[in-house]
Length: 195
Image (tube, rainbow, N blue to C red):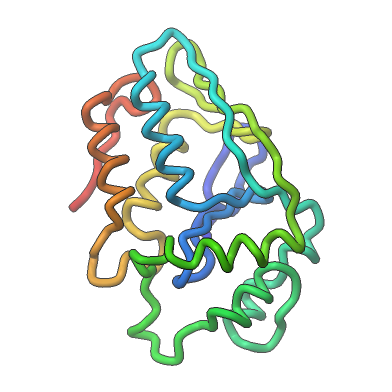
């Protein structure tokens, strides 16, 4: 589930997975698949020695809270509003608490999840800019220092809350970690992966 993470620009924001059947992430009002996020991180890692680096990511942007929906209501099966409500109608919260684990094959639902979010979001190209000294990153409107940004990456590595089912990580995540560790400088300096 999404957790509260600190940012330099917006204080505490929600970031993370929000349905165990999908690999979609939210960063406040930006939505993107973890496969895309990790590919973007790999690109940044390959350029982490540069003085500064700018790239562009494609996200889905949802303006209104009502269009995002009510995560708690959807999890409890009592209020299915907005995009999150539609998603939980398709992929409901598990009956058994032991089954509440992020599924490493969540990328297989991307076609269906893309169809659902198209009813609420709008495609948006955002700039991703790494500061000259590698101590800050700006992702669209959101700025993070090195430690804050690394927490986002480590959250995905763990499988968020409740972690990856069977501690099995998808291949795209392993590729991202390996690329970061080969280019462990700038914004990635000092990052420590567990497991």
